[in-house]
Image (cartoon, rainbow, N blue to C red):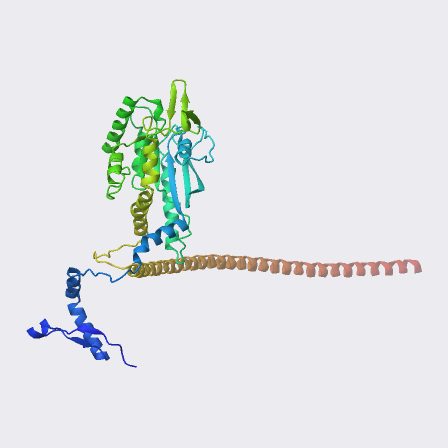
Length: 465
């Protein structure tokens, strides 16, 4: 079977006339392929540079169809749905749950939080919302007991740990061999609404410390809670003081993007309204001919969606209707990438080797594997040496114990031999005494018998007389 014809420019050297009119070369055998590869390696960079400099724009003769890609992307996204995660950080009683109900025009499950908790806890709830044909999986995370402790030094740690835990869960799913990111419930926090107490005197030290710890992990949008409790002049001074303190302490808050021409002007103007002064309400009051979400006071009514009363509408426009996708994208591209890079560096992975040369993930893996093998081999050698040392120590200990037992055995054996000798001597003396006693007894019996016979003979003679 013949090889396919591959047209390539002829390699140098050429004459001047040939250079002006390049011919076409057909690669047919292995030798030609090798020479072609060598030539391509030689002139490849030059050809690539020329191709980049001389990229041609072609006109289509008819409709192809790739202009429907945005429609396909929109259709697929609508079919899969979206997810959005909000973290509400603030002291108990600032109206975090009420503001969430007002933002999404619904009633979420929420119970009043006590002020007597020993520490800060985070509670999350996930809801499935649908508007028109767009589905949204919304996760609301609330801080329970934040700022209620006497010692507030560690109040920010549970919040930081929770954000890192969500990053870690996504990273572990991403590192799996069989990943299911399309169906994975992404719980990474996309925006943190930090509720500031409307004191009018500036930020508390807890606010500055917490936001400083969170600014490189999440998009922070500061809001002044219950803004209807202070007057407008005080509110403007309070906003200026808050932004001044944030800038002087190096706290980076989220800025609405201005690279999109369609929303650049609006976002630029809204960036000047930080922090948003908001208030929420679950009550509806009739104002004129319509029912509005408002708060009723003896001196009047505060309408939540009235821009002259608070910045609730501005916050909703920027957070949900205009920049929700940018918040999601910033979380993934910036904050998650920072966490991912740090975690991979902790695991020992890096894009550069010890000589600051680029290296692939496979090279890093092989290098780590080799280091791990060397470390295991070193540990094995150390354990082997420790085992040998312990065996020698045990042998020495056993030998000493054996010597002690042997000396004890010899001592007992000697004592036993002495006791046996003494018993033998005593036995011998006893036998001698028994023999001597038996002889003496015999002698006594003999003497008594002789004396008795002599007396009998004398008695017989006397009778005869």
